Image (tube, rainbow, N blue to C red; front, side):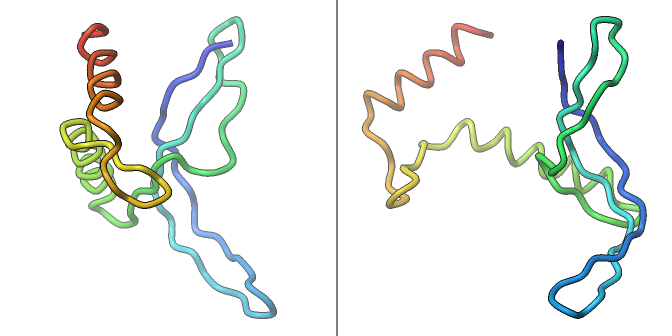
Length: 102
């Protein structure tokens, strides 16, 4: 089985929070899509990996998000617990793994 990221269209829908019903506009999002041995789409993740935007700028919004995600690769990695930079040795270790794959 293989997979990749794909842009997925979400049509307008309704959702309920408590006893209130809300309308959700159509939007685009990035999901993981899984393929069978014949390379045919077999499944998709329930939740988005990257949520996009609605309206005519939906693809532009996804492009902006991805460009900014790539920029994050050039910034120090932060610790989840306290949002401080992880130690330099660990930063270098992760950075080395990126450089060897290019």
